Amino acid sequence: MLKGGLSKWINEHPGPEFHWQDGYGAFTVSVSNLDRTLDYVRTQPEHHQKRSFEEEFLALLRKHRIDFDPQYVWG
Image (cartoon, rainbow, N blue to C red; front, side, top):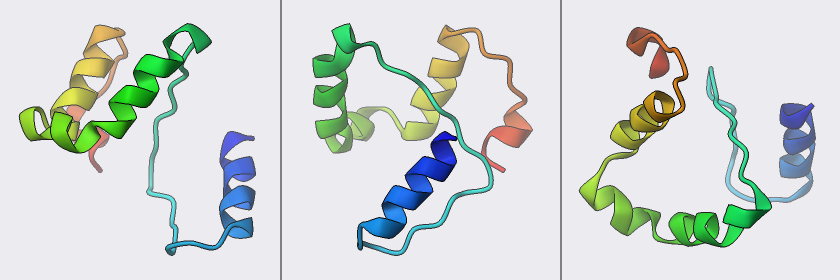
């Protein structure tokens, strides 16, 4: 549902060519954390100079006790 709805929206709004990757993760954000999340998204370039996306993603999986096999995380 989410992927289909998002694909429809992307196709209706012209922009750079878009393709889904082989796998994906989806996470939710509660309304009470919305401002903090938006600030994080706005400052990602600076944030990822200190910690890579890959490091942060794996830490997020571990923090929330999500089982994963490292050989499949990055394809």
